[in-house]
Each structure stands twice: as C-alpha cells, then as structure tokens.
Length: 356
Figure 1 (cartoon, one colour):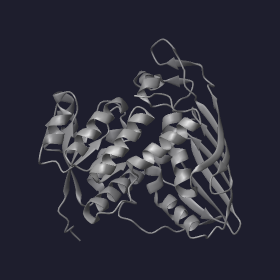
Figure 2 (tube, one colour):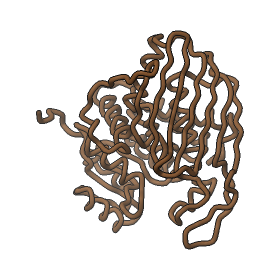
Figure 3 (cartoon, helix red, strand yellow):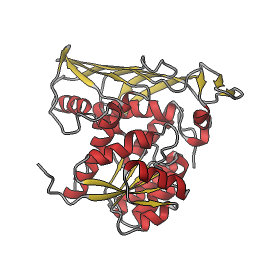
C-alpha cells in the first residue's frame, strides 16, 4: 500500500562514495528505505564529491558547503555523518535553525562538547537522534522489554564478547587516521562505546567498574606504506557491577578475521536467562542480532525493514525512530543526553581520550 505520509526531506552531510565509507554503506540506504523520509540533499566540503554522491544515490541537490544545505528551506532534517571533529559545528548549526538532526556517534570530539550539545538541545527541544544503533536492533528492543517487564527476574550477571575486524595488526591506508587520538575513532570510542551503550540501555548504568586497556599490536603494518605506532587500546576488558545489581564481564577485541567477528551477550537472571547473538566485520552494531530465551529462539515482530542488508537494518530503525519522534512529538531515539552519559561512562573507564 502506498504511503500517505508527506516525506521529510533529509540532507546528509559527509556522504562520500569514494572508498569504503560507512555513510554510503549504512546511512544513505537506511534513509532511502524508511517510509516517510526521502534523501533530498548531499553536502561535503567539495562540490565534486557531493555531486558524485548525489549521482550515486539519485539525489537532486548537492552542496559543496554543508552550511548552505543546512540553511536550505527545502531540507527538513539534517544527518551529520562527516568526520567526528566536524560534528559539533554542524549539529549546533542544525539546532540553531530548529531543524531535527541525526548525528553519527561520537556526537563530538570530547565529552565536554557532547555535554554542551545536550544542554543546548534541552533548551531548544529539537527532535534529534544519535546513531547508537545497536539499541534499536529489534532483538535488543525485545530483550530490553523482557528485562523491564521482569521476565528474567533480578539480573545476576551479564557477560559480553564484542569483536571487530578493525584495529588489528595491519590496516589499509584509508584507516591510518583512525589511529590518531584526535579523530575519536578508536576501538575504545567506537566498538567499546556501542557495546557499553547496549549494556547500559538494557540493564542500567554502570556501578563500580574498572577497565584493563591493552595495546596488543603496538606497531601496525600499513599496506604499501611505512608502519605506524598504535597509541590507543585495541583490546578492552571491563569488570564490575551494574548500578541496579548484577555483575558485568565485558571484552572488546579488535583484529578478528572479517568472517569471524562474533558478538555474544549472555544475561543470567533469577527466573530465566537470555542471549543476544550476532557479529559483523565492522562490529555487531553493523549487523543483525538474534535473541534466545532459555536457549530457545525468540520470534520478533515482522518489519518492512527486515529485508535490508544486515549493515543497514539497525541504522534504518534509528532513522525510523527519529521520524516518529518528529511526527508524534515523542522521544524514543537515542539522544544527546544518552550520548553525554555514554561519554561519561567511557571516561570513567579511562577511555575519555580527547577533549575538544
């Protein structure tokens, strides 16, 4: 049945089709798949790359200046998927113009900047979302409901293994910038952050917790170039308690083979146990999850987004949540406040790497 919605025009900052970019793989297809949204504009800092991206995705408008797109009255919603150090200026520009905005995580280069954005948005009350997409996974949503409804009983323990093909012993030249602390794109601030966000979203805030941060590959081979020194952790272990009760044992590991990057979250409750299973080369957040309850698969409600590529599904559900928040005046999408809380949790574990 054709949609009766009036589509919201989304303008995307940072969509570049050169290389293996996450915006082209995850964000643009997600917007184009969500009923009630239309990808209407693409902006980069160079007219030629914006035009290339617009042509690839069949978008009419392209801009060599992101602020020009944000100012365009034809754009209803702004998606910020550019490099992290640019996020703060672009997000604040959208909020200043009263335009709903979705930004990729991390929201800004540093916890202080994230807190600033959260405070400004709270005063402006503009609909927004942060792409902490794992919590919008249908399986994760169902697990959160089971925990909230008391189906598992009191949480006794949570154990997580979260892996990624990134941050191993060798990289391609395009990923060399990820080794720089100022980019805020490390194993700690990306993979660990998405994992910790899912845990705290489902089970509540961290209590007394400590992290062991290890650099297992101190010198990283670069294809066709000189090796680089790794300054940031590529293996993270977190042990502690959840504020609401129960122990937490969490391991985040980089450098797995692309076809062997598993994710497993196991929770033991007084009444029942459950598990989320998945994994993807970019990390579990860029894949689909399955839910088990006492070892048996749990059927999830069907969705029109189920047929999307695995890397797109959770992102599409995040955009759909923002769409619903815009239309209904609700607040269901991951928020700037959630991002600021996550940044504080990372800092408490020694992963607050850069303040911008």
